[in-house]
Image (cartoon, rainbow, N blue to C red; front, side, top):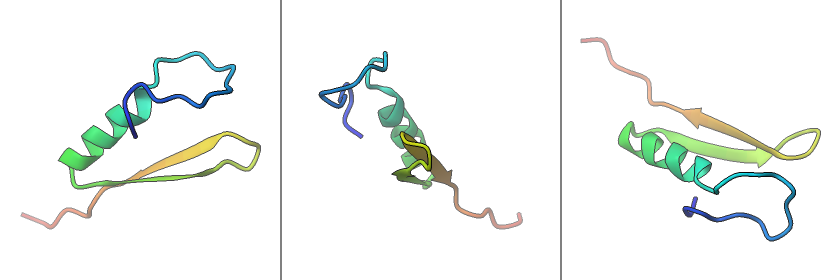
Length: 55
């Protein structure tokens, strides 16, 4: 989740900030970011937020 990190060999455009931003937002909400290989290649990212208790 390092800012500006990109794999050495990639044909995809981007600044390398996307996952770092997702992680920062998730941390503020006590959520977890889960990364996995996608079935057809690439990356699958999932954010799991904690269940809220009723007020």
